[in-house]
Length: 540
Image (cartoon, rainbow, N blue to C red):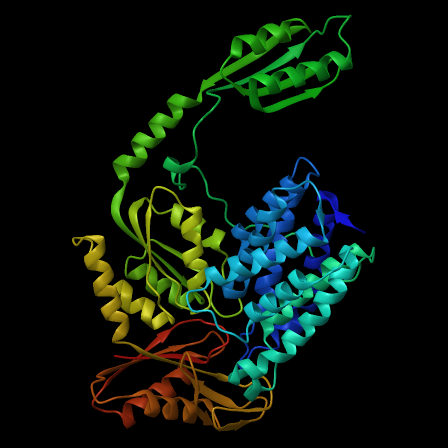
């Protein structure tokens, strides 16, 4: 195969998505920290599935059109850091494909190089030993290649990709300590392997992924109506054609449908020679009706002025709009209730093992009728997706407060003052999160040695957002040990948020033990309802 066209590229992306879905559990298991929150493979898989959904909406098989839809779908569905970087790899690749009708080995190499450049530019502080390294080494190999066919090019880059993946532990010491390769790098290599299988005609049957159905729709009442786009065709026109003339044929109905598409959009013409239902958005309802009369009689005509409806909606929306709003991301019904109690406008589910996509975050932000919106990611793996969501939102000023934990998000929300402007609130929020120290208590999911701890699968461990800091025989012992490491003399309050698999009575025993050890502090217990962690802890 010397070139690929749009149909082949669509198949390559589809195959990549399938192979990634089959291997996502394996990729998830490569998470460096031995805690049950590895979700790199899942995030990348869901990002690819979003691209597939958009491909299915593509009206042509032109490479430029398919590439445009892949870009848009990947951006909408980008989840977690790995998903965002994946979307940028696809964006860089597709930017080149949009300019050509077919891509040979040389153009494909250029696309891989651009994919790397765009991916690196998306990360503030790129680290070597990650999926970026794998992308870079693959693209360097491609550019230097003398391959004449696409198959030969992939034969080379896949070998180089394996070498790059095996090099990641040498470039990133934490990988070497954990005895794993980079999970994102594994995911990216899996994507390219899936593409290669499509090129050589190998079908991937096992584990074909289902299309993810989006949860809550953004209704018109909750959407940012200022950013719904310009109404090109202002009149919603509906009617029936009945008592069709004897000379009318099915071909005439088809031609009528084609004519409506020249004067409007959202065209629906369904029926037969007995009865036809028509719907069209157009600026010329009369022309639609007059052409329909050539086929038969018209009945039940309804014409609505969408321009006026839009003006009224915008008028109402602007009347209710406020200056400032807040959006928080968290896991657990208890945490969701806490954020709502402190006047956060929207709370969406997300956190370890369930990173929301950039599109999810943008949709939630659009439901907030405010000029300025503060977003609290509350997880370091969601910050990049939150930043990415800015590209999907118009008409609002988005401020991402880089909260890495839920306690930091709570502190930021408590610092909110609706009487102050956005800049003052942002400064206050950043100061607030600086005064919070957070930790989590969970369990090891494998036997390993890390951060000077010899861990066995199932051990109770305590950690902050960077390191494992404590190990205990049970939850109580580990929680107290973790707090002892985290606590400094200025801390006067300790908050314990217990997870969904702990009872309140069991959590109260831990709270009392902490209170007994630190009588100078106020120790409070809250139901967080979170998965993965027995306790989320904050010290202030």
